Image (cartoon, rainbow, N blue to C red; front, side, top):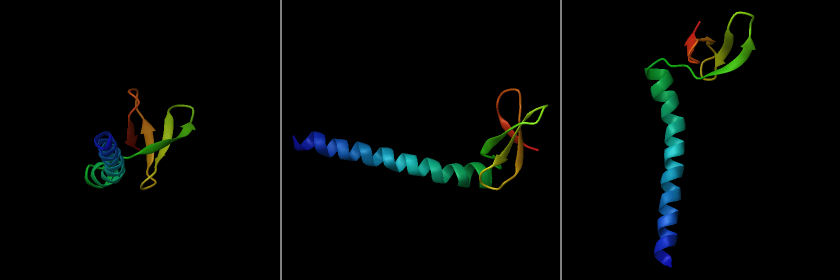
Length: 71
């Protein structure tokens, strides 16, 4: 009875660590080192989807594949 409880706690701790690491490393590695922007949509300006990077405020455009790039 104790072993399944301990295993459950370990699994939940690993999942929590991975979720936290994903949030931290996505900004540090993806944005600060690689220059990738994490854009949120501002809407459609009549010609293309526009957005703003949530980390640095850079203006972004969405390409035909659904990927964001800096304007």
